[in-house]
Length: 543
Image 1 (cartoon, rainbow, N blue to C red):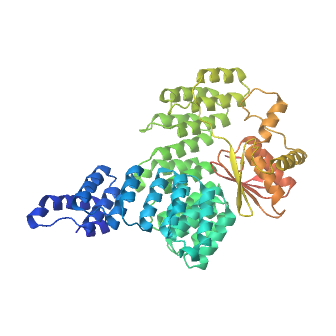
Image 2: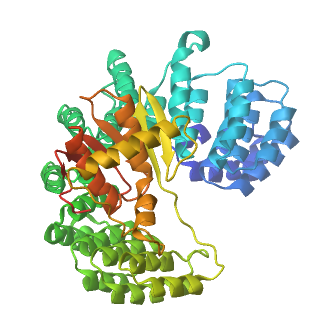
Image 3: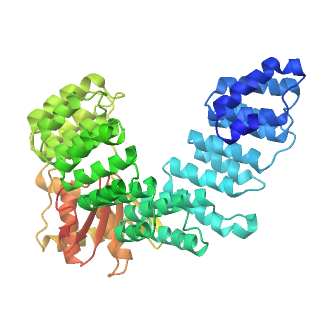
């Protein structure tokens, strides 16, 4: 019975039945053995109940099963799930015999804590590795945002297939594709796709969903659509991946058509589906359609709006210029708005030059402090600077005083010859930085010949115009584009991923570069894709 409940993932009933066994077992002279301990320990981990697990651990010692390999592995996994790595090590050290599962449970514990350096150290010491060991490492890197290392480990796994007698399983392939999606690493993604088709794994639902996501986030929406169209009966995850991919590529109307098809085929959307549709409406200015979906989420599909849905809707209204309406939505929310929602509206205030509303918003934000960050005032300061109100900028910064502010540093990635190169604003670290800067100077000069003039409205300091132009000249995507023009063939597209929203100046610059060098430049920023061709952008300057 313990095994039966465990098999159907009913961990609550497994623990309950084990308690009944302990209370009544003496009547029938029945006591737990290594099998029952194994099932109940794993169930405690699934129930996220460390106290019950510790009690069961005591029983394990009492009944003398601490030396059992399978029980020991379950205990190491239990403590790893809860990040109690000292206890996990203690059990591991006391085990008279260990196998690949024992080591993998330790690696998994550190990976779940985000301590990938320690996980790497233990992984390197493993006498034997299997598919699960590699999957834990690769998924751990993805979960920690270390995507380039996830791709590197996937390559290492492929190179050791024969030596370690391992082959990438579905979990590994999905994680590797996810890493490629985050970095926009199309070359690596194509290689993984080739491996999937060569080994007959393309029919897996999870892999197909990951392929759609990877191609869409690498700017290859046609390839994503081919994968999607090859699916006879898409499930909710594949519909959602396709809708989200179309949305971030600025194809809101097409995303709505896929959403309508989904509803016609009686596939019920989930929370992520609605987020994807709302993003599509936001990036395409479809206020009427987005409003209808937002206000009918509960009645039509039984989905109560969460903070993320409110954020998308506020962004939709703000981008379209309905600032007061967006402010009203925030004030009427049944949830406490987070900094992401306020930031969306403040960004819209900056685009539409509405200082009065921005000041009212910051007044709303500050009482909450948001973990000690003064991001509201930082954004207000940026708005003042874009309008040249330098006295207001100084006043805002004085109000911020010595409080720590969290500001993301602009960072861009570009893949060249299957190698990911990272650039930061005013970067000095790249091995070819001097050559890149010389190239960028030449590009800026050529861009000026077709009408490019630096837009310095994003500079948040009171500098003279020449210094402002220097400040925007070294933005990370400009450095990445310069490197791309240096290292890629003239007919190839340049693909860049950026962690922040593309500023007005870089947007103008990339338009000019696409004309001067007759190149397609694809940039995925924090919000969406921009495809620059012949001096135009796919976003139609609506971002």
